[in-house]
Length: 107
Image 1 (cartoon, rainbow, N blue to C red):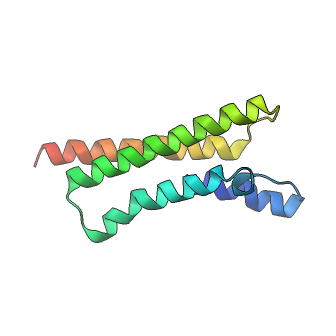
Image 2 (tube, one colour):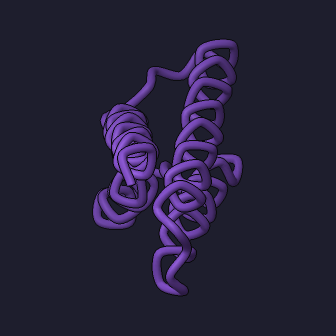
């Protein structure tokens, strides 16, 4: 998720284009969702609570990607690779959350 938000911004800085986190602030929301998803792992939540928290943040990130995609299409912009990388990150994060929930149910 973070690579999808920062990647186009860094590439834009090198090529002079505006993209990624500079475009409407959606990238910063993805960075926050990814950070919030990982933070509870550092304080030692149980697997079930961590899985649910990660899954909710992945869904939030996916919603942000969907809204950004719709906004850019309505504004006449073409979606770039960063949005697809962020969406894939949301999917992987969601799968990790589901796996933690599954593992917690077997404890």
